Length: 219
Image (cartoon, rainbow, N blue to C red; front, side, top):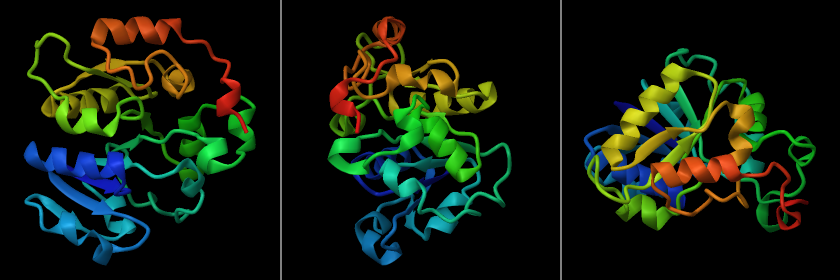
């Protein structure tokens, strides 16, 4: 598949390397431009591009940028992208540490629903629960004991199935975490967050989550 990645930090950069090693074609971009991504451009299967080029990837686009930066993306970034292209949001809202106060999220909107409205495009919420070192080194063969599960929330079943296939390529189990409005179950502060659980454990953790955001994760 052709996969665009917007953001070259811990999660975005790790995904670029992992997807390329799995045989996919990766277009990676950040706010500083292709010249700042020379290390990635030297990797087999990875090409440094502009944000607009990454957003036009043929199959999947992964957004891995701070939540506060989502509103800075061009309004028309995804206007020319086909409806079959899966857009994945990996973001987590950290109002005190990084993002500042975002009123709609503070009032109960899920982080990725807010992101979806900002970009005018349906998204899946995924890769936000797994630490980058686990994403880099934690993949296991299908059926292996303790294989890490990655929750995927969203409203399009076909898009989820496409992403589940990519997760399997990376050595992880994808599990359905419900609709995008249920993605609060995998936000920071919930039992599944950064827990590296297997599929059954992740499902239990999602079920056990409570919607109230902890005080330390509120503005």
